[in-house]
Image (cartoon, rainbow, N blue to C red; front, side):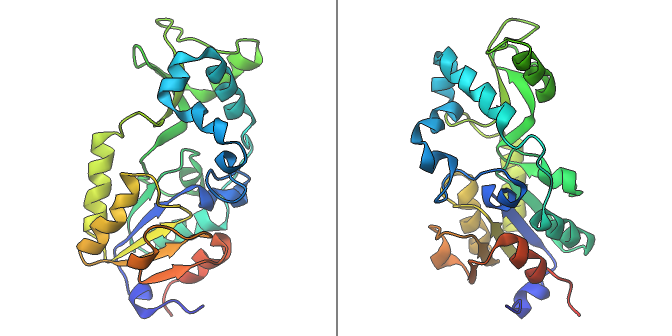
Amino acid sequence: MTPPAWLTEARRICVLTGAGISTDSGIPDYRGPNGVWTRDPDAEKLVTLSYYVADPEIRRRAWLMRRDTAPDARPNAGHAALVELERQGRLRALLTQNVDGLHTDAGSSGVLELHGTVREVECLACGARTPMTAALARVDAGEPDPACADCGGVLKSATISFGQALDADVLDAAAQAAADCDVFLAVGTSLGVHPAAGLVEVAAASGARVLIVNAEPTPYDGLADLVVREPIGEALPRLLAAAD
């Protein structure tokens, strides 16, 4: 499809990405037809704070999941298209619900990671942060539920689990970007998790056009100026190509 003029002429595009942009990199999404939680609803407990803290077995399963989830994942064409958008000088901000770090690996700068990062672990007691690779090495060495080396507290990935609050500064920066763009582009996200999903409304209320690229319907399709159902790796490079 030919990109609409309002998109090719946009100079302040705010992008929100979700799990769908990383599926071509071998990282499964959560809520899609073949998503992790669709196939195994019980798996959602692994990223729910109350279950994680209370149940050592949940923690053991969570560590194995982190170890086994596409350890060699690399950025794909969708990530590269957003790097190109930044190179064009048309990117207002790149916000992501993903925790995989692939936007940074691709070359995007200043990514706002709304749900944290899986590249680090944090202690829920003392707040110490260490690399995820070090924690997984301990798991491989025979510690099924490694504790904090500083205080003995519970360790978890430095991601925002269900039941945890988002970082207020990151969320505020995301809201400012959504309110200060001429196009808000939501890519590969079901737009079912708040407060991130509500950024669509913030942008639309501020006068931005809304473009949604997602395989499945979202609650905000009716608010969008354009909805694209094509594969992300094919659609994004074409939609975000520089104007001739």
